Amino acid sequence: MSEKKDGCEVCAIKFNLMEKSFADKCKILDRLWEDRLLSIGKVTDTRFEAQKVAVDIALVDLNRRLEGMNEFRAQIQNERGSFLLKETYDSRHQLLESQINLQGAEHSKFVIKEAYDTKHQLIDVRIDSLAKLVYIGIGITLTLEFVFKFAVK
Image 1 (tube, rainbow, N blue to C red):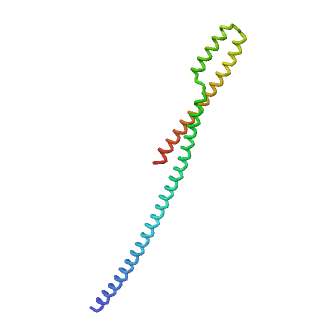
Image 2: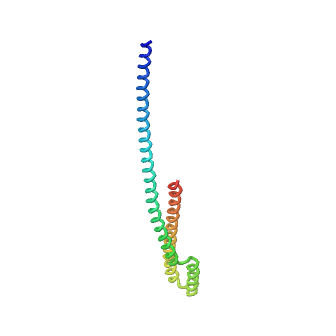
Image 3: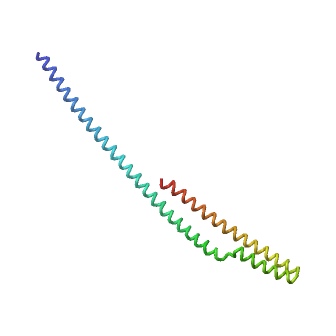
């Protein structure tokens, strides 16, 4: 019976050693998990900070672009006042043509026609330039709207 008792004591000692070893390994795993969670938290914080910085930079750039667009709009408004309206040009041109017809000078008609063609070409160039500016403005506006839709998401 004493052999059985000695065997039980050995088993109890082995069990206690295994239990202690298991508890130590559990503590090590707990520390590893805590370290891992802390590192994940640091990475997440770093990512959020980087995103915040990127948004701040984008906001500054966007404000700069908007200021440029406002200046561009003001320039277009200022230039708009310097263009001759087609209706004004047509009415004055008709008046000149009628005066020339009354005089009956063919040479004068030729000179006036050349002046008309030159002025008409200048007006066409100005209208085309203004149209290009408007298309550029619309393109910039659409680009910014596109950027905002996808950058904010």
